[in-house]
Every structure is written in structure tokens, then in C-alpha cells.
Image 1 (cartoon, rainbow, N blue to C red):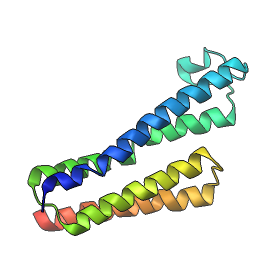
Image 2: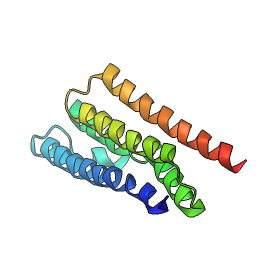
Image 3: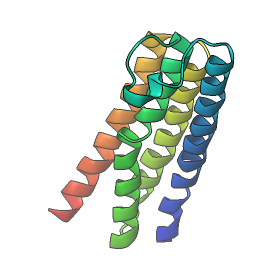
Length: 137
């Protein structure tokens, strides 16, 4: 199997990450223009800030947590040149549920649904790492 196939699922997650960055910038500018937050809030992130801005900030921070393990897994699989169908299924399902998680977070932000999408991503990623560990040990 062509090992570059494992790199394709990385691209949508990276572009979603950039979308989240630009969304956060938009939200911050909106809060500043509406005078709901002052510039000094950004020095140490203390004080009051609107909930919608905090939600956008937390969503942005999330992209430097679990997705990092996804990128690493895909790169390791690429380097080892040992891509299997299950690896691709796990990677693409992770992408789908990461998009679902982001959609929920950016729209209704309904915590139970958001949590389901998040934990499915985590379980998929854990499965991918276990599957890799089984093969290399």
C-alpha cells in the first residue's frame, strides 16, 4: 500500500486548525469592538471575558493537545512504511469526528454531544496507537 495515503488525513485537520485560528481572531476582535474585553485581559488571561470568546480560545487550545498525537501517529506510520487499511480507517474516522467536534463547538456547543465526539476521537487515536504498538513490539 502507498504510504503517502496516511498523509492525506492530516491535511483536513491542519486546515481545520487554521480555520479555528481565524475564527478565534474574529471572535476576539468582536469582543474588543463591543468592549466586552480589554486588551490587558490578554496579558495573563485573568478577569472577565465573554463566554463565546472563552469557548473559541479553549477550542483553539484543544488543537495543541489531542491532534498532536494524531499527527505524530500518522508521521510514524509514514516513516515506518507500514500502512494498513485499518490505519487509514482510523485516521479518516478521526478526521470526521474532529470535524463533528469542531462543528458542535462552534455552533451549539452542547456539551454532551461535544463530549461524545471528543471521546470518539480519543478512542480512535488510542486504537491507532495500540495497533501500531502491537505491530512494532
